Amino acid sequence: MIYEPHMTLGEARELYFRLSNFGNDGGYDERWIKVKVWRMPIWLPNTAGRVKAVKLHDLHHVLTEYPTTWRGEAEISAWEIGSGGLDSYYAGWLLDLMNVAQGLVVNPKGVYRGFMRGRRSLNLFATEFNDEMLQSRVGEYRRRLKLDDPPAPAAAGDTAAFVFWLVISTLTYVVVVMIPFLPLLLLALWILWR
Image (cartoon, rainbow, N blue to C red; front, side, top):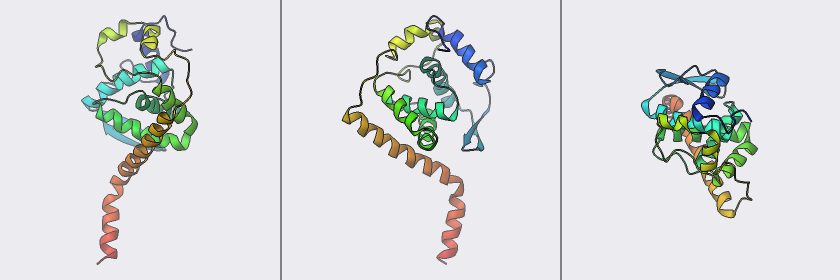
């Protein structure tokens, strides 16, 4: 276990930033973030909405111990969706859906396990981040979110929900990835139908 139950969330988050090479503040103040779609880096604006979501997402990394690798991001994204979704954190929804779709290729078993773990636990997205959270103990929040509960077998409703979110994730991924190519596609169609 990297983030021990006796640590405060603040101490654990500092360690998480250091281990992930995110700098002292996790990059919250940066104007742009780099997201990789496969091996291609894409720079996105670091919007206020994204920062609000990622502050909770970073705490989820600490509490669940999912790493910041491609495989780990797929697992935590599936867990966040399975554990109740991202409420009104729309930037987070988009990134999680994209990560789940990529995870189907790089870590399908991890996506399934993360989603099913989420179905048995809660997440922080029903709340808004505040600095007081950082004074609480990691173990306290793990209990609060039911992360220490033993795994249970998936019910039919869990499997149906998993399939539903896989379809939504895949459709989201296809649409987002196609957007840059849309002008070329429209040009090709125009040329063909002239």
